[in-house]
Length: 122
Image 1 (cartoon, rainbow, N blue to C red):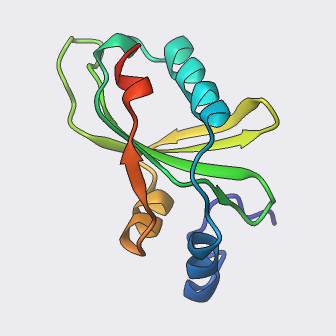
Image 2 (image 1 turned 120 degrees about the vertical axis):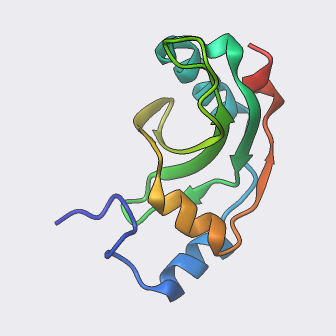
């Protein structure tokens, strides 16, 4: 069984170690996320209230980054600030998931977030 997510896969101590070894997200990884969102969201130009976490390395050795953002849905209405998880391997997003409970868990354990203007200024 491969544990990509944290729920039920790691202990609190391991989660704390992952957070303690996290580092500021690079400009390169930010640009990968911006490009992915630009190409996949229905209205990427509507994004506001964006924040990005420090980069963590998950149990599989893949970069794991959490982002908060508020974007319009297909009806043109803002849906409220949501938390998403992003895995990056090499130069591409290998997994993106909305409403990420693992990111919520890590945020609750003290994962650091910073303003993400690059995503708001598409």
